[in-house]
Image (cartoon, rainbow, N blue to C red; front, top):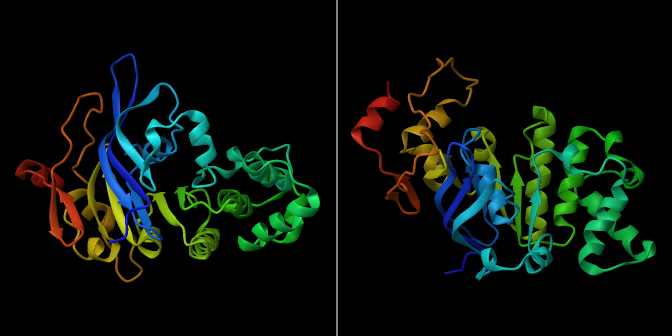
Length: 308
């Protein structure tokens, strides 16, 4: 059996507030196999992006990692020094951020931002060497060569997002974390960016964590899906199996929220309410529903509330 390229175990992230710690991530466990795309889905505030930032050790005060291990290719990166981790970012694990406009430097041309990403890890290189490499990266993400000399404000939203994808793959990482990469784009551009992501991942043979809240998009792009609710993973399994046989009430409501082009569906309001995240709560007990498909055990009261 092939070893996972990424293993997250018992991850807990808290945010310090005057009213007590907010438990944003409450003992999360998952792994990612080589070449696999794992979807991480849930409503805003469920802890998805907090997990991504923790994996990359980019959690900033008042947030902090309280517990857990994060193993990349078998090495616990949670225990590495900042310098050791800096050398692994971009080269072994990279991030496609949620807001491309906020992530790109508005006063630097695209060529210089890609150059910085490469030279930070590989040292200074001549334009003669780097220009063909940068142009190849732009071609890989389906951007015309003229983007090389442009500033971010001269690009559309979809083009800016593809520049971020180009930066994330510049050093051929084994794991790419895509944090809601299509959330600010219209549906036509979403499809283009999503297709670019799949092609890039396939070309590099990388693994990917795709974070989002669009269940329809996740259904098309991922191999396995992990559903987050109130800082916990409440269901995880192969995407087809999870859609065919959703077990946790929250998963059912997420799937029911997908609009249908075949029939009118009434709006269903979930009775599930996120708990006060300042109150310590146990990590859910997971039961295996079918091979590789696990769901948190819910009691009769939770089931009744979920169904109104």
